[in-house]
Image 1 (cartoon, helix red, strand yellow):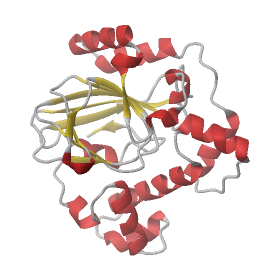
Image 2 (cartoon, helix red, strand yellow):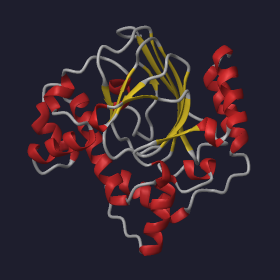
Image 3 (cartoon, one colour):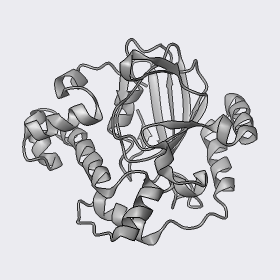
Image 4 (cartoon, helix red, strand yellow):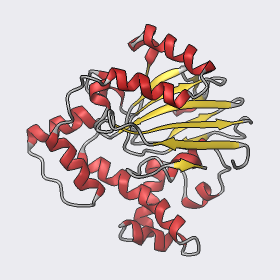
Length: 269
């Protein structure tokens, strides 16, 4: 527990591990003091928001309320949100290519956007919202529903999964045109974009590992040529400078930024 919030991740059961990376929850007893940017992490997600609807701030200053239940696609730019009251979020974080089988359509349809689950699967969504709200263990209930959904799912595309594995290992990826199309269809972004996202997220690992090292050393540790190159990606993926990000208050954005992209992340904050 920290600053009125909790963040917890659980390892999924082996039955869904090929498609799902983590089941997670975030709760906070207070409203957000200011909008916060949700950063790209390379993983699409199912989100069930049982608190007051988050406000999403869009280009031009428009503010829209997010749905109670949504499929959030890949992000290539920051998603600015603000909680107007206490937060209770339960979610499924897929592998980068893991949501394709659950969604049943090309993932790029939701890139830099979200799909209202009430439009996609209304009966299932109503049932999930009702049962999550009163469940003793909401994460276990959510996981059981996904296990049931993916019981007969086709295994991930071997070539696409191999490319993703190589990207996480910072190894070269070679896909022919057909492979590139399959990657885009199943991941929602090109391989080069996923590589850029993963490199950016490593900056926060570097800061965590060496809290006195500063942004220059973090940039080099993450694989950037220099700090200006990293600063470009801060603007691209967070819409902030590194200094502005460091001044952000605790919240969902800060909870996710150093956890969600990691294949082996877990635990409670």
